[in-house]
Length: 367
Image 1: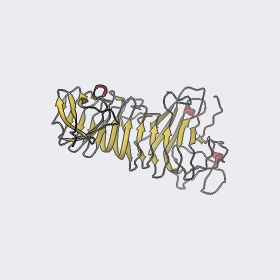
Image 2: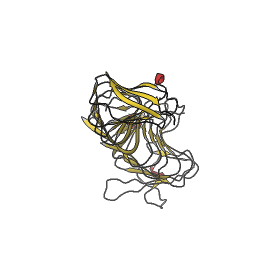
Image 3: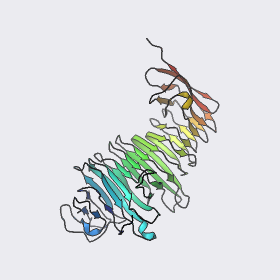
Image 4: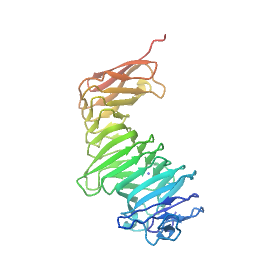
């Protein structure tokens, strides 16, 4: 994108927090772990800083592991909480595995980081079949830090199974960490879902697994999913509901992108596979001036399978003229969408010119 002592543990708080964590294993008797940290910002990276029962401050005797479900919540918290995944020296200390992570009611933000370390190797956070979930009242959640952040430490989020990431909150879930597919299998699935208005943002890369196996992505959300990084996964991307913005470089992601009825593909990035828009599926673009507009680029074909639509928005600066909305190197199949939705005060028409999808935009006559 200070040297400190490391322990084979979980997290710390750097701001006053009374966060609770509930962990459930696969044993017959469920084990609940609750953070016993006080408001002094002390680190909580060892098992004796958790209790086994809600309300009981008797320290736990075991640490959470790959079969446990981590649940973070505190409805009264207003300041951001910085939670750090501590790693010890040596290869085994660089990874943490849990079955799931769930974020419950929290008025503040949660930041998931790796520990600062002289060791330049990244921390790998492995999440199993339980996935990652933001519940309805969860505050914003961020994994890792943006490239260029002075506090940036490398964090990789890796699927330990076919993985679901679900955002049911009004707040965003942002991954500045790399995302790796399930390791050492021939194929795996990432499902991005949710009923909230918050976005799910992959600000960094979505990668194949270490052995090059396929990763397929399914989008089924009421909100928006944003791909901002350089992706190279090779499975299909199926947008079943909601919107997928591809603003980064997915030219190396060679699988097909399929847009279902009622769903939308948006953005101005690069796409490496064929794109298919189903009947009543949508393409959505934001335009500025015709001279400075960046078109979406598709390395293969774009196919309109039925009565698709194009939605055009503008954040200001749009002017009359012809816009290349999309360039498909392999050609455009099917008929240009007849349904065109424009901002108030504009008239336009969609056409296919060679391998380009073109918008001819005009000002509506004044009355």
